[in-house]
Image (cartoon, rainbow, N blue to C red):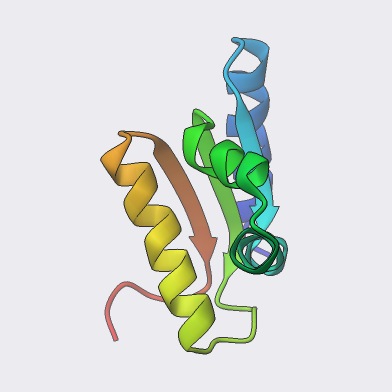
Length: 97
């Protein structure tokens, strides 16, 4: 309702038009991909999620949260930080609890 996803799409389009590699995933799609990486050793997918120029995670917090999802998401974001790759996260969560 507030345009977070639309803004993410606009950013993605601009960067794609400039030749950058952008991956857009809903939080549920990302968690499914992280399971595939962990349990099926999908190294190509892992490389894509880590090495893309921008990873956009839409609607973080709508997925089923458990220790696996939390640790896998942390590991993914941490690897992107280590590789100095950008990530955009849209969520309805506030920064202050």
